[in-house]
Length: 509
Ligand code: SF4
Image 1 (tube, rainbow, N blue to C red):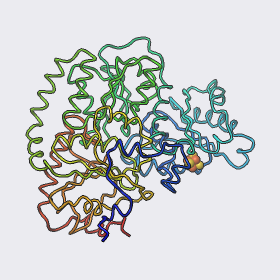
Image 2: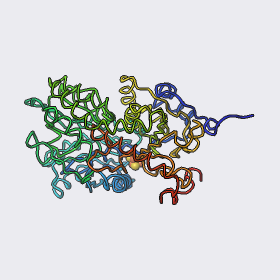
Image 3: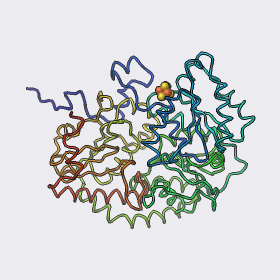
Image 4: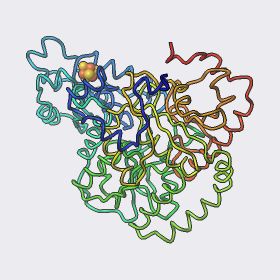
């Protein structure tokens, strides 16, 4: 008799994150990868990731050096996935419109002319050139084109290499793109005491029209009463008597280039933050604090205390933490009583299959509540491409169980198979979503009978709490969401509209 579960029949197994990392062939080992994960293509092209990071800047124009279709692909992505929620609501991105003749004769003249026209017509402070597959393959000398155009342009012009065929997995694209922002910075004439940069703050645009202490970036929060993460991280830093210097990637050119004046860097998202911190350390000797993505009590305490030790603010930090803990402990205890010993099913993205740092940081916070951690929905190659994040969590000694297997391309794992495989009964687990289109099925798997906490940055909205749930305010909001989700699931009737409309999971069709 075959006693294998549906998941096992499909070749999935539970493994430590470290085991999944070790068992996955290195990125770039194409034959091995194709053998193990046939047809895996990565998610978004590097050009898309690079331009979206630039969408957090201000008074800037992205020049796409490539065919118009590459630019339209990026525009489409930006307008549907980013501009509605994050950053610049309409990043200008003219294109050099490389055609079949240019790929033979070269596109440099077109690039120089486009840069001059953009400088004249848009009058930005900064222009960044992004190349594409075709212009990288024909070897257009972009640096020389920029030098030539720069002689007659007022805007500062930089270049981020972004051809889609380079480093297809997302993590590698991000790593290489993030470090490029250090190349836009200038050697500081002075280091400003007690100042801190927050690095790796992606998908938030700060208003850098003011710079420096009084002039520090004022939050013009597009989310209104729903805070962005930078608001909470700034509150923690200022709460121990330090000043925010810059929050990156964000702001106008002048704001970015003066970032090395800060005494120290601290990191929010490791995927974006660590590569930039390392490059700034190499180039400007700016030290950085190794703690990242503070979700939950202990990670937030460590994040603050490491910074406090470095800056001589230990006493202030201890006092600050004590006060904050008093504020959140009632919700922590209540949530813990409700979910202690239950399983946290944490999805690492639905069809994107790429989220790692955020689900891991959430898992650390849920472990504090006494939950058993099970991560799923992360493609092994996307984990392999996030080696920086992986190393960070391993160094912290956090190595939970994750579902390893040959994931179908962009197809969510059926959560009912996960539940069956783990032999979980109603009331024994909580579902934590991380992305759009969460699973739902009225009468069977719906918030009305299975507790569900929305933790994805796209959809999570909690009044006066940061989107990704960082810091003490984020922790308190997480505990409240857990309490509400468990209480709501006790209704056990009248499924939500979403669950009724969604019907059978679309991944089953
Ligand atoms: S051709 Fe290359 S750069 Fe253009 S959209 Fe496709 S992968 Fe991206």
